[in-house]
Image (spheres, rainbow, N blue to C red):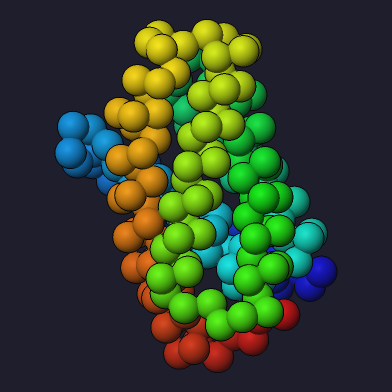
Length: 171
């Protein structure tokens, strides 16, 4: 894998982490998971297995360092790795077809949902949850999935415009 692509992935994840940290919560404290959005965009732009591994591990480590969930470090690492690998398979299959903005949004939503389920399941097994898992899925995972559906489309469009104007050649 080219160093340029690794740097591009790392830059996208860093931007996602910073945006996630500085974005205030909306709708009852819920906010776009910009790190996850940028993970999906990174995988869409460079759908190679090595990039999926890099994205999952780096995304997980960045999430783990900034989590506010007590004992959420290991669940964050696990959920980002699993999510990036599943998204890699989906994107690899869909790359045979025309990936439009609706598909991008759906992939962002699927990635968010998978991430939330894996995080909550692993957190329940490792450290326990403060409320039943069903309440957290209904109250946090599903609304965040919907919000990230929209956010992924928006960020993907912006990154594609930036790539086009900068003349960066991916792959």
